[in-house]
Amino acid sequence: MKRVLIISGWVVLIAGATVLLGFAKSKRNNTPCKSIDVILLQKGGNLFITSDEINALIIKDQGMLAGKAMDKINLLEMERMLKENAFITNAQVYATLDGSITVKVIQKNPIARLMTSNDESYYVDSAGYFMPLTDNCTPRVLVVNGYINEPYALNYKNNAKVMEHDTSVHSVLPSVYRIASYINHDPFLKAQVTQVYVDSAKEFTLIPRVGGQRIILGDTTDLKQKFDKLFALYKDGFNCNGKWNEYATINLKYKHQIICTKK
Image (cartoon, rainbow, N blue to C red; front, side, top):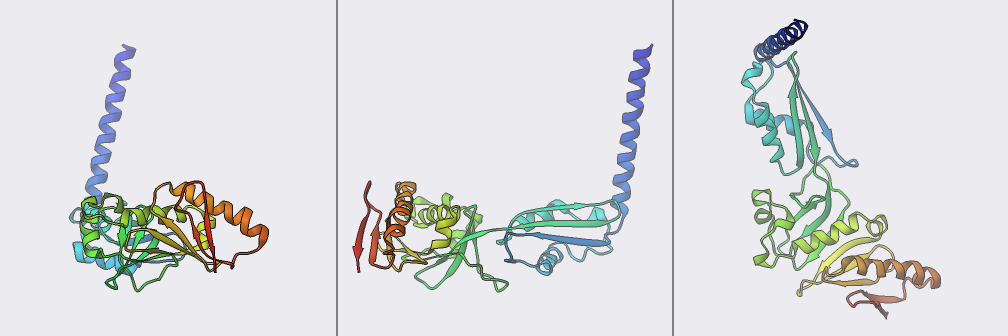
């Protein structure tokens, strides 16, 4: 008898909860939208897309929302639309029972600016996605130039990552991303290396902030070992003799050695 009463009690509770949820959903559906709160999350002070621009995108996608019944507003579609924006890496949209809509947007984080041989320029972000330039800000990131002939429109198609690029066209972009990502994750390299030059053989040369020499990296084979050699040279070589400015080139291409050429 006691077992039956317990089960009956749970049935009543579940039924009551279902009724309350249904009532809450019905109330929210009939409630007019009264406000939209856009929250922008970004690293540093760079603002690639503004709250006003996000509101404009929402209005273009679903019309004016103020006063519109909540059941006429497609929150999932709003999320999908925002995630497809070139400056946005993620978006969350949710509503409250009183008719408020919150839009949380996480911006992409660029780590390199690519400057092509056709005078086009665009960014690649920390996750390997492409970004166009914007008038809202100009972030201070690694500059990559030289023999890069791949237009932004082709690379951004279907929002593909750099590392998913079609290797049949012999793209340099996966290698560019590997170098930029490695530099971005190392505080010393991030502060010291300002530019990467891609030559006609698709090999890479680094331009440092201090020292005035060219650092010949070659390809991206054994990338960690090459940067370890460079760090050792800075720490145990240049710091000891103070001869930062005596060398024209530092060649890291060859295993187990560094070749330095004097000016």
